[in-house]
Image (cartoon, rainbow, N blue to C red; front, side, top):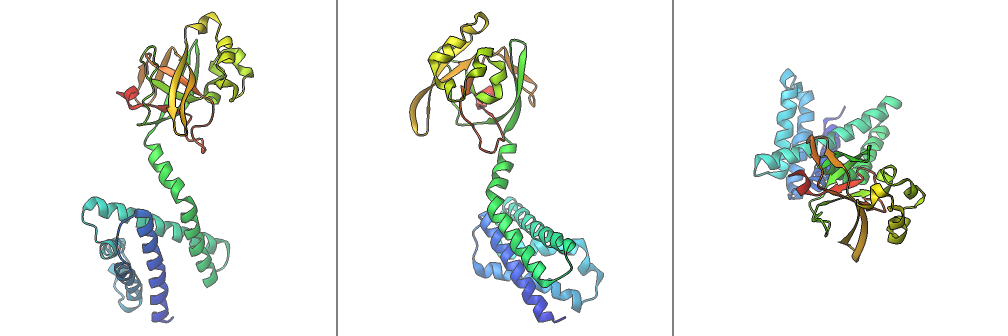
Amino acid sequence: MYLDVIFFENLIINYVILILTKKFSKRPTNYIKLFLGASVGASYVVLFFLLPYKIIYSVTAKIVLSFLIIYMAFNPKTLKEFLRVLAVFYMISFLIGGAIFALLYMVKFDLNVIVMGFLMAILLLYTNWEYIVRKSRNDKLIYNIRIEVLENHAQIKALLDTGNRLYDPLTKLPVVVVEFRAIKDLLPKTLGNLSEDDIGDFDKVSEMFQEEKWINRLRLIPFMSVGQNKGMMVGFRPDKLVIEEEKKEIRDVIIGVYQSKLNKYGDYAALIAPEILS
């Protein structure tokens, strides 16, 4: 083994990891600092062969090294900034290491395999980072709700939408917007023949809500949205809405029936306003 080759290989890998950390953490720095941080990481590998001390191989030493790399590369001002950048650095390092290990597990050791694993991990980060961040944020805002009406119920995942200020103009009750397909089975049986496009036809919908047990529940809710100055949404008043995580029952609420999908990934099928939780 040649120490200079080992040093430069690790320097390049560490530098790319730090560049990715800069991109995804959005922490400002310059390329000189990134180079210094990468050099510290590469020098540590060389010490494996020069200093036969057990402490160099310890987990503690590796953690201290990662702290030093982050401090030199990004110089964070607060503990919160430091931990956020460190978390991104660890995640990228583990993803790249995992990709390389997976390829080595399937085929025999080869330098080309390591390069392929490295490139594959970078590709995965670039193509999936937006989804990872969005999923992480949304999971903290998603609640399990149960809508009950006429002894039937539906379990739905709902996103807490701080921009939802929709109210029924007649009763002044807050509106929970729910996808039609998620509550189709709760609505009058005659609505089962309607498509998602038909749910916007108020004449058709009104005729199908003429059952005695439904006629007093029907609401028409005016709304505004991006790309549409104004529109009308069909809604109804349920017996109650239950927020599972809060163990909270709400009776003064309106369910607005949305005729399309709220989320293209299917992470949730309803939008609830902050007022619902308060």
